[in-house]
Image (cartoon, rainbow, N blue to C red; front, side, top):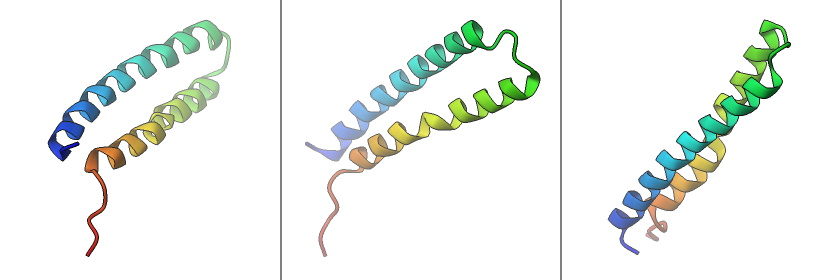
Amino acid sequence: MPVRLRKFIGTIIIVFLVASYALIANTIAVARLGDTPWWGHLLYFALTGMLWIIPAMFLIKWMQGPKKSQ
């Protein structure tokens, strides 16, 4: 698969990943964090704000294509 096509597909997947992840994370926050103190909100949103990076990292590596041997 050409790298250009991988980047196009990967970009679409990343946009969908971020949008759906934000929707799910905020839905969970609204449903579960109503009575928690401010530091609970801070901890939750700090954790969920960094957690989406893991699947995006693997997707970006895939978008770069196979490594060229020297």
